[in-house]
Image (cartoon, rainbow, N blue to C red; front, side, top):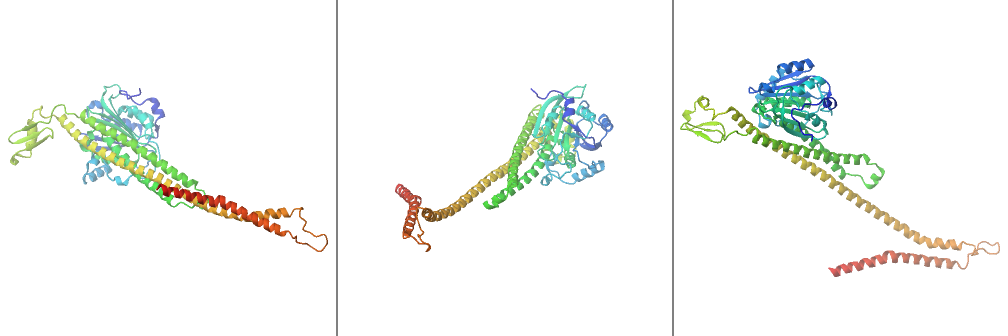
Length: 523
């Protein structure tokens, strides 16, 4: 089976067939730990990339924690990358406002703004701002797994995948790593792809975000600037990816809901039957069908992405129970007359206020035996707390998606119901028009029955069998038998009308009266 294999890079076939290359300036974000120093660089030429990777890029062997992210710019983006001075101003602005948790671990500030317009149009995330040789070097030095090629090529299906593998640099030891791949569908503008390789041993994360518009780059940098301790959490970047996709979907859903409601209201103001017979409504009907199909497709896409988010939430539980699981029981407490220390919260509580001196906790920790205090256990505890926050946020996003899915379902069902009502009203109008035509035809039939006998017998009397002319030249002589024509015509007309009335009107009325009597008797 084609499952993720250990230490598998991108193949040469995928380099050539899956990705396209248009070299341009690209931002690289590095977040150093534990000082949380964020630097942003702009690299363009092959020489710039090689020099930066040789001098600046940490390796899994160095045990240097941090995060390195390449923002692979989307084609068509012309804005000049933000330089260090701009980044300093950004960090200053971020420090001057209160930050909520969603911002810290991938939340959604300014979510109401939704998608912002971009000049790139619908361009694929496959097009990379590097040369082929530079991307090959990046894939090796960033320990990119070959599964990202398949994820990127599945452009119409949203994906979140995770795998626990052995990854490392070529010719060097491999280390346990978590590999994450995320992909948003390209059915709408601004699709993205993300690959992350996280080494829990060294707490180092490599990542590449494909198809970045400039406003997405700035949004990601803002979030990483305020990540804090969450920068060491493996699902930080997939969480930010989920927030970006949420913003995109909310804008799309709002636009689709407005469009389909407009189509529903158009059904109420449909033209009359006669106008429809003279005017072609092919385009309007095609637009309604397209809107219905698009909304249904959107709903299916939201359901699929919601399932991927559910996979993220399950993985947070997995990380809590495996990677960040305490190695021993830390729920006991250490107590004395002056203080009480809880290992579950890692906080020192003084029993007497006068004992709480500024350096008391620091001195106490220095005197603690290694059996009671472990830096790695403190990191695990912090990661478990962040995992709870990430899990809660993902559940909140899933709830939003469920609400949007219900809205799409309601609009689709509403359009189907409005269409049925419209068809019902149309059928009623057709029935009324048919009834009016039937009354007109009955009038024509009665007139025909009145004149038909006279016409018939006039034809008979005009035959040579009857001689209406005298033998001399004194002019026309009316026959004494003209009364025969009048009598036969009147009798035949009355007989015709009587027969029609008996079979069409009287028998039908009598049958209806009998049925009504039977109904009254049964009641």
